[in-house]
Image 1 (cartoon, rainbow, N blue to C red):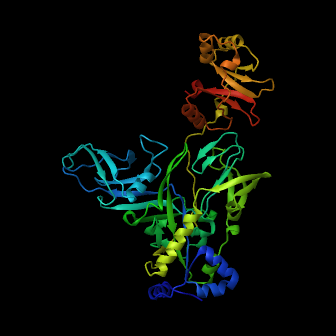
Image 2: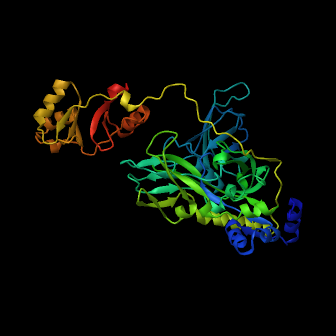
Image 3: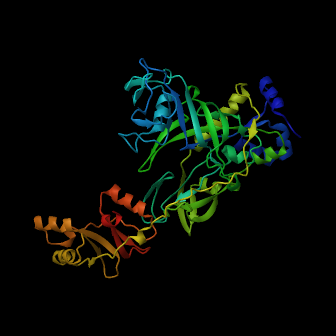
Length: 490
């Protein structure tokens, strides 16, 4: 049994089309079988709503009088990219504002535009004979600009890994805030509702496929960046008219101590052309597997602890090394369902027709990592011997150590070499000035540390972000095995 796009569109036109969501299709196939489902169901709708960092918009502002050719421009203090024509720009959702980094970014600008809010546009120019204006400072709205094209190079990942943190430090990542010692787990995606899980071989999804995007109609314009279908990490390159969209389905988001992104709503209709597609669109969450990955290892190839199904993830808990770990999604299942239902309604009401792709997407793309020409350096290559005192030392002993060893940092341990704190030469100077005599008066007990196998660049960033000049190097048991200071980094 085979159907055609023309037959399904005719049913949409005359009101006889049968449309169900991907969740509903599971029950239908279970109850009636694949053959009957393929005969009775014409379209299965999908949906996903979550963070999609590779998103942004092309904007055209029209010419000022006299005209300007932007060299740099900012939208609500977010630096947009100008490398196109005179008054075109691209604003990416992860670009952070100059004045409110980590709070406001390009995704928020796009949401504010779609909401109808005025956006401050500032720009400057090197000036030319035909573009003599040097600066602009004005306001624009979505109605006042010419074109506003949402253009997202990588959206709708087929699946996402589940992120955890085995270290004793809280991590701030694009997968959210990961608590130490497997304190929580984060994942993303809508499981059985996600578009690419319902057509993993791209029989119906390809160049020109009409979709739900951001509350309006959009299109697939190719494979997304980092498209890796052989490992079930397929992605899509999407575009649509921002002027049709809704801020309900385009949301600017800020992740604590990481940066900004944007939640994007994507829904794709899957025409049931044959029994194979009927079977694929009945995929269950228990059949969709992903990896639990330890994000405490700052390498591209992070350790995979085990595999887990989306059914387990959506239960709210997973098990790691015998420990029950609370699990939560960065995506919204509520809005994924709402998108699938909205797309279903559009089709039932004859407002949305299906079109065959002009070209299918590749299924054999090989994902290649970046080739590094410079050698990556690690803390263990730069650390030096830590000068230590026990936690029952007096200040005189610590001051003597500073002078004898010509070292500004004294690491405080117990007699088993476990880290207890750190004291600097400035701490000792301040203690003398304030007539303090006890180590407990000046010791810093909450010490930021590093490990042998941490890249030196990350250690340097940790010093800078915390405004400190040294990091004790510790092993897995928190025993001190060295120290790295700003002198080594320099």
